[in-house]
Structures are given as structure tokens and as C-alpha cells.
Length: 228
Ligand code: C5P
Image 1 (cartoon, rainbow, N blue to C red):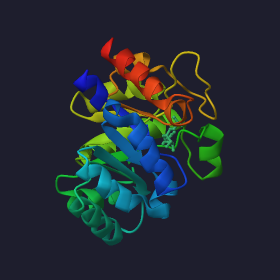
Image 2 (image 1 turned 120 degrees about the vertical axis):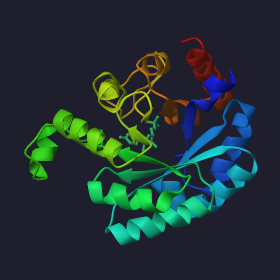
Image 3 (image 1 turned 90 degrees about the horizontal axis):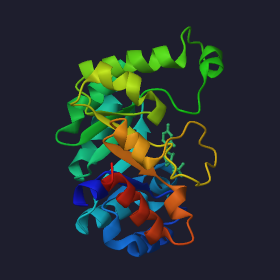
Image 4 (image 1 turned 180 degrees about the horizontal axis):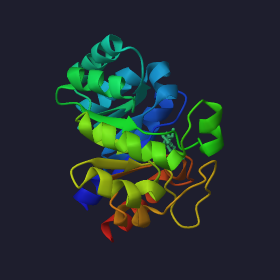
């Protein structure tokens, strides 16, 4: 169960540090790994990240960095100094190389193409390729840049795992237990399907954080992972 527990990352997508603390306390030992994203980071979440580390939790800082190389390198070094576990950056070659230079032991995850983008959105943004082509290209570039892992849709796992090999961490949001409300996630898999498709970690937010009984919801997902 410990291994299964470490593979679940709970997205702390709540407005305040107090709400996040209450949730972490409710989830207790069931959850060992948390993701702090933009909303909470801008509301005191980086200090909370330190508290979580002091409680022995693992912490994924989802800031999706993208800037000129010097700035990315220095920002990455700041986050690495705080002892966090994972940090996201956008999968542009310059950005990834700069983050790698500043990361030390901090593991870097590259965001290939946002899962809210489809081919028409890419065209509108000036790209002359499909989402599938761009994801595959960026996955190869991430590997070449020495990036530790990728954030991707669970449906991309079967095509991307062969490109990056077994050593790359593949981390997928868009996971919903059977029967759960999909919300705005369109391309989903169940926890068991995502793990069977070689995800190293799954990121789950609302099915746990908005559940009537969050601890029981998290326990059920850990049990489902353990059963794969
Ligand atoms: O509530 P839900 O389980 O949909 O939360 C998924 C989490 O993963 C959210 O924090 C969301 O911002 C994040 N995420 C995502 N899709 C991406 C990248 C990140 O859903 N492509």
C-alpha cells in the first residue's frame, strides 16, 4: 500500500491556506504527496509547502515556469533550495535547459501541451502541427534536455512511453474513478487504467477535495492503484 499511496498526488486546489491545512489534516496518513498550483501558491501556498515537507509529505510545486533562460534558472534554483520534490516548467527547449541548470536534486516535470488545447487552438496560436505531433516532439526534447518527467493526458501514455523509455516519470491529471463527475476534464481514465498504462503518478483534485468524505475517496483510489 505504501507504494500505491506514493503514486497518488492530491491537487490542493483551494483558495486559502486554512482550507488546505484542514484538508491535509482530514486526509491524514492516506495521502503522502500534494500538488500546490497557481491559485494556492499566490495565496500563501509556498509557506504551506514548507509545512507539508516538515510533516514528512512530498510536495509538487506546479508553477509551470516559462521566461528567459536566466530568470528560469534562478527561479528554479530558489525552489530547489526549499527542498521541494517536483516543479513544472513549460516544455520549450531553452526553458527546460535553464531549469535543468538550476534544479540540482529537484525533479523537473515538463508540460508538453496544455490538455485544454486542441488542434484548432494550436493553429490559432500560430503552430503548423497537431497536438499529437507537438506532444511527441516536446517529449523527445524533454528527454534530450535531461528533464525527469512529463505532465500529460492519460490517453497520451501509450504513444509517449515508447518515445521516452522507462526512466521518464509520467504524471497524469485527467483521472476520474469510475462513476465520478468528470467536471471540465474531457479526456479521462480511471486510476487503475492510468497506472496500467504506465503512469508513475496520478494527480487527482476534485474527486477527493470536493468529495463528501475526502478521506474515504482517497482510500478508495489508493486501493484501486494497489490492485493494478
Ligand atoms: O480536480 P482535478 O482532478 O480535475 O484536478 C486536476 C489538477 O491537475 C488541477 O490542479 C489541474 O490544474 C491540473 N492539470 C490538469 N491538466 C493539465 C495540467 C494540470 O488538469 N494539463
